[in-house]
Image (tube, rainbow, N blue to C red; front, side, top):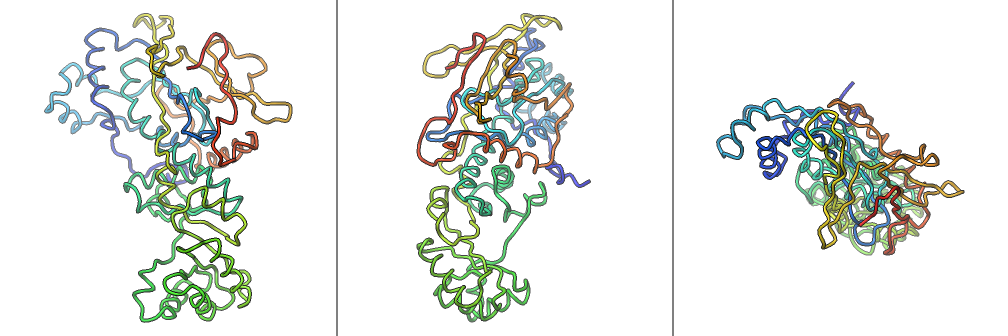
Length: 448
């Protein structure tokens, strides 16, 4: 089986330096202090959703698993750390044998989350867990932000397909991750071939204005494209005069023309005029695709327009105004000593300024109302109440250092569709508002 079938990158190098230096300095000091082996529990969560968002979307979990598997300090990495004198001999020796051997639990990819949700829990020795902070956060913060924007756009599109086309508006590697996250959030296809190659996402693409400008006439350009790609292709009709281009497109391809793309102007007005013109020319089955710096609000404004698909770039890959999810990675429990069976004690940051956290190893469950709709995110540190036992959200992702939760990317995409459908209807409103369900703390835990 091709690794793309499981959503795995084809060739991932060591991820060990996708980290902040302070993690290595903490490791060095903990090794010297004799506290590095204390069993520890770290959790990923966010204190609040981006302003106006009703829910978050977990994305990037599969990429986190890849990163953990490939977190290895090879000779070149160790030489770099030695030459820069970032760590000393004892730490270098420890890093040379590093393999994460702990457990990771988390919300499955595609699930929704809310303030305080323990989106991921990493357990093991302090030393092996603390090193993973930056790489886990950088993946989850980015991918979840893109997936949340994609989910809002997908909801606004009302079932019409969305095309991800933002590769030219972000870093080349971020573009691949963004395409993957967008697919989880509900997009149907991508223009990015690297994303198609790595993750098996369906790819699409026809032509840009440059192709039309290359030819002596618009007719010549359309004829060349149809000759090569067939009548089912999509012709770009706004290089010059839209009405004339639509007429020429149908003359060249016939009424069986696949689609036309509109990339500028008053999209609502132009789409109506183009639909009327296509119908009058007999091209009643020809689709209309619109692009042009769309976001969820622009997509929603086109709900009544005769549009069949949307292409989204800049606003998607920048999280539609919220390029990060503000997730943090905090130590919530640690053993009293380095002894294997030493009991865990809750720990938490208690400083002022809105950055307090909740100590203790947590569970999470989603309580439903009598109609089967989510009504609360319940988080606790003690026994799980019997009525919530079958509503728990965390699943085992890594056990004893081995990944145990590989799944196709389509599983995460389908899970998100189901999770969003299980929220109150107001979740899909684009107007500003609070999280669509409250977060409740049980068994003595208190939120911040």
